[in-house]
Structures are given as C-alpha cells and as structure tokens.
Amino acid sequence: MLVRKLADIRASDANVKSDGWESARMQLKKDGMGFSFHITTLYAGAELNLHYTNHLETVYVIEGTGTIEDLGTGETHKLEPGTMYALNNHDDHILRPETDIICACVFNPPVSGREVHDENGAYPADLDEEEATAS
Image 1 (cartoon, one colour):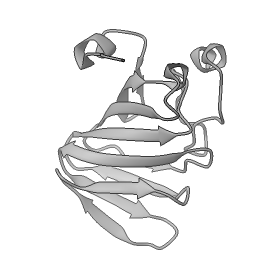
Image 2: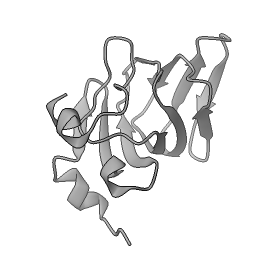
Image 3: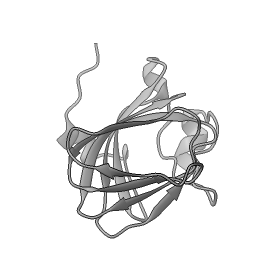
Image 4: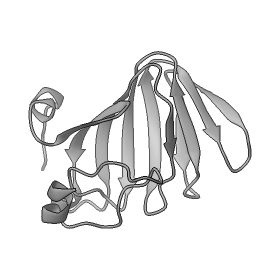
C-alpha cells in the first residue's frame, strides 16, 4: 500500500516547477502501478501549448477556471471545478488558466520523476528514474 501526503511531496524533489505550472508527482513509474498521479497547479495568465505525443493524460479540475483549446478541432472548452478532460488521442492543446487551476492528473505510461515539457510541449518517452532526474 502506498500512502503519501501532498505537503510531503510539495517539500520534496518530487515537486516539479516549470514555466506556468507546478506538479506534485504523488505516484511515479517506480511505484509499479502502470500510471502516474499528480496534483498540478496551472498558474493564472500562463498560456501552455502542450502536445503529449508519448503519453495519454486525464485531468480533473478541483479548483480554478480557464480554458482548453483543442488545436486539432479548434474547439475551446471551459475549465472549472468538476470538469474532466482526457487527451485520449495525444491531442495538441493550449491551456489558458484565468485563475490558478488546481487539478488531479493521471499519465499513462507513468512519468518517472522530474520530467518537464520539451520544445514541442511533450514529456520524453518512458525514461528510467535516473534519466528523469537528469532531465
């Protein structure tokens, strides 16, 4: 059984910060569950162009508001507490938080640890823990 507290993860190296966001990596590849679980904060005013070509992601908005634009269809959807979206087709998208958004995220395959987005808005493919710490 895994039991972890958000405050402990936020105070550890499993809390990753980058431009426009911060992610508490609560569960990682090394935990052997087949997915990773994150509590992520998207900062108000950021514009995050992301395209997870190596991962599928599901996101549940806990707090805050903003929009997500599907660049494949041109559709824009409102994000607010209680909204879930799934990037089930490696969807190229732009997140625009109006306020800080706190969300729960699941990645498959799981991330290994310290990954941040590359120049295309993706996380690298299936890294081992040592590689992820160096990225």
